[in-house]
Image (cartoon, rainbow, N blue to C red; front, side):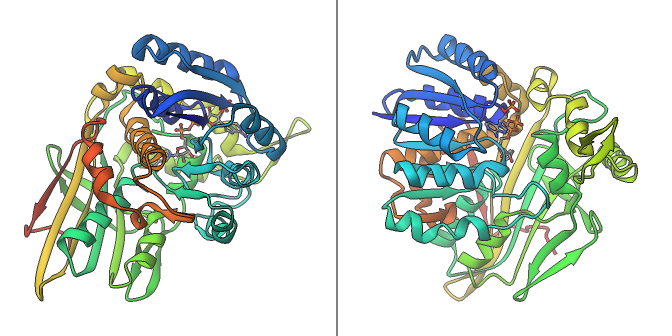
Length: 402
Ligand code: NDP
């Protein structure tokens, strides 16, 4: 029986609130707080109606402001905070957790607003402070990062003595019927996919031009999809935590239409994060673009198709070569029917709520800052299917990854 505070009332916050409310024995009281309280109120009303959980309250908070956060946390006294606002707020929320003595979990690594830079250094720097306070911070507990790290931990624990090659493959074979839309916060999403590609090989990071490397990958129940090598944040922690890895890459599918729009957006300067003067005001092009693009939270209703995300791994077991593939497919429609959110929000929100449950029930315990692969994968994966994301695995197959 614990109180939980969820920060961020977007698509992911909606799913996290549903999934916590479906487990009233663990999450006995829920506070959903965000910059716009009316968005929290809409979600809370839906969740109360569909789950019957009565102890859901809402609040307004500016999570960039540590004193505001501290005040709210002290007033509500949660056991932990689930941060599903934006990556810009990670450090202020971690500061507030330290000050008030509550545990912390998020789904995306900190990014400074002025530079699109994805690395864990800022959050890993909190290690000693969380350890000294006896608090647990779990970083990157969505799907990718998140479940992909837990999948890799399962592979390392049960199937390999040494992991040598890791390919994380992420397909969204959904159709939302819009000419161009992003599946989660457009600002964060466009910053992520317009940066240079990067992968890890033989102890070094190899940089590529954006979308320079692509290959056709066969996804279960979906078929072949053109997939592009991009940099993704879990690669950084996985190569650190599994030093036997010789090469680690991340692949994501993009349609031709999507890439054409993206190219135009970049070429005309709308992906810029430097302010420009417009009618005497400072306007950040990418923030303005977010305001005119479809709200990812509204895509669900007409979204068809499914996502497929997994890890293809090869290495050595008992002196012999071994291959392993572990994945989940998620239907956008099923996600929408259950929570009113599309599949990408669902695949992020379910692991965040499950990670919180692992922490509150003591199945994930520790003092300090942890990436998910450092925690026991078994109890998490036992519950992932029942919570809505069933997974599958195959051993000693052709991974089709050169
Ligand atoms: P949305 O943009 O839909 O929602 C973000 C919410 O955070 C909004 O409700 C917003 O409030 C709120 N917010 C923003 N700034 C502040 C602030 N200063 N104080 C309080 N609240 C604030 O994003 P998503 O729900 O799509 O994504 C949420 C998080 O999940 C992001 O960090 C994203 O990177 C991460 N993510 C992780 C994935 C994974 O697999 N690991 C995949 C997809 C997303 P308002 O509406 O009022 O602006």
